[in-house]
Length: 433
Image 1: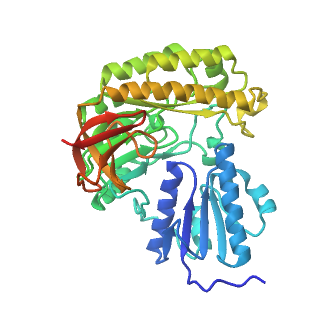
Image 2: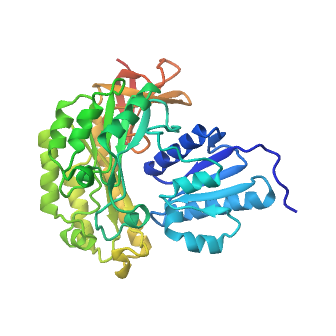
Image 3: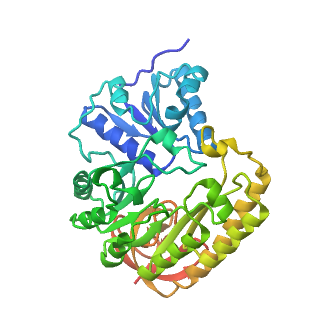
């Protein structure tokens, strides 16, 4: 028979999925802490909140498995209550309630006040920027908008996150100031679509204005841009990247594909010619810029010819950073009406081909860095190495700079000048300059 755990109420927040979910969990934990609750992140607690991802098949499977794991722990008495929130819960709440009935309650992506109430806490509107950060102390995510207005055929994000909603510039500045006062030196700007920022609030794109406001925040040394959309890109942002030393020479711009036929079916609103010109404009305006992109292969109707067009283009563009994913057939998206006619083994083969090509490109680009000195941030010490990044690398997804901790001492969280002495596909070996 199940017995109630003897632990006092400690709330364990478990985060799955992307950086937007990390941010949401941090806001939730900040609210709980402000209510006097004891809260931990992915450590033992007798009350569990699972912040799920519902984006693609692999992420959904991980979320379901995690819910089942904690449902079992509740059955055996090692936890008392389990709550589920986030994208999977938003998208499949009725199904989840039916299939996993011993979860205490399911909440959607906009149900934070209700989730807090279930946890015995009140939503405090005055807590602008109050978060319990879970990233290393030197960097934090800054979510500048929620939702998305783009009509991309393959994407379920608008179903889970709603329409685009920008956060006012003044609120984001306050949040940045609070983060800086806690030791954060790098802001990673995130949204479903950074380039749409401001259109809903100010009736024009104001990402450049936001960057100009954030660079004035004392203590912030790097500002990094994630998830820009290629259509309607505000070119004044390029001027800010070039002129403001705090804004990293870096941009993450998911392009998804380049074959005109696939782009049209994906409803991306652009063409190969326009996208290629945009990247040329980037490199002309900011010659030192590192460009990161993500691609989808195996989209319905993608022919071998479409794939070869993409592969040839990747070889020509020589992206600094690139990720590639197999298409996931998602219910209630526009593409779901199309036949998912590329076999899984072909999808994976195409992923592997793109990533092998990118690995060679990355190796060649990294060889050019040998002998050069870069200003790097030291994120952590891991084993026998200090692990850092250049301004051209984002946390978790990009290259890392490794320094032998047995021979050299560096302070985690600080910036250091490092000379590259050896280069691999995705790692750089360095010594203090």
